[in-house]
Image (cartoon, rainbow, N blue to C red; front, side, top):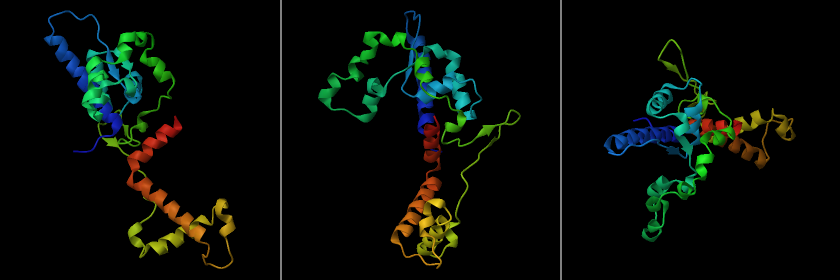
Length: 227
């Protein structure tokens, strides 16, 4: 199966919580006047509060969540107050006895969360569009088609065409000389003698390698930077 990004996994968790809520309400024999939903993912809260068109994966799950809950029922919980983190990250036996996994999060006992709705959390975060989903990239679904078009990062180098890394390194070093930042390395002769210039070329190649090999992470970091 295709690996899911962290935001999508958080969305799956919110969907599972919604389904479990419905099962619990059906099993209870006492009336429940109101329910409250919690997530430590601000991305999920953004998707729930956003009126923008979302990628198919996100839109389908948000639609199911909002069929049995509304936005006002969803609240943000900090990771430190989230009992689920205790169960997934592991904890010693002694610490478990006094943990939020057994006793519940302390914020529920204080009642302060009732006066801090999740919308206040979202006001502090710039609402980015669906492009901030790293697995979707720059996916945009057409109104007239269910086929999504994905725009991936272009391949900058045809790595297999270079006979050696040394040759590639020197070519990049010459290219960097065109940048005003590296103008001090420009010489009349076409030789590279300064080891710093070669090191700059290696660093630039590493950046390109990372950008192409970890495209999803690069897009996610770009979204965070632009918030």
